[in-house]
Length: 182
Image (cartoon, rainbow, N blue to C red; front, top):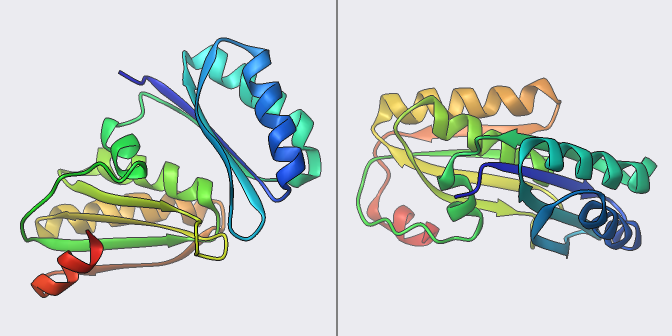
């Protein structure tokens, strides 16, 4: 089980590769992915124990310097966040839908974690920047009250950093909307 995640987002692919190497050399962490994303950003997701993840993130940020867009360390990350990032959520049903959109890729990770911890929702997707011009979004479902509480909590995380674009809650979406999201 993943306990702590670190996420580093840079606006330079070359520095991103160098930062990923520094992250892995700084402490005992495991790389989940390190890859270029639109538009020329580089994202690094890694896991480990809290102290190791913090030390590795510090090393990556030192290398990335002015190219760092956003970063986070999330102790006790909710397992649904990782599943939704990998689009491994298996969901068939109905309920309200909540969508949060962010200017950074990292903001979706910490926004999704806050959302899923706030109420009983199912994360359907945490989409990280590919084909989105460097933005990201989170999609969740559940009963209306839970989705509202979750969207509020996750959106607040993005607002605190100035990275929230918009958020919506759709109480009774048409079934085609669910199909388009899966």
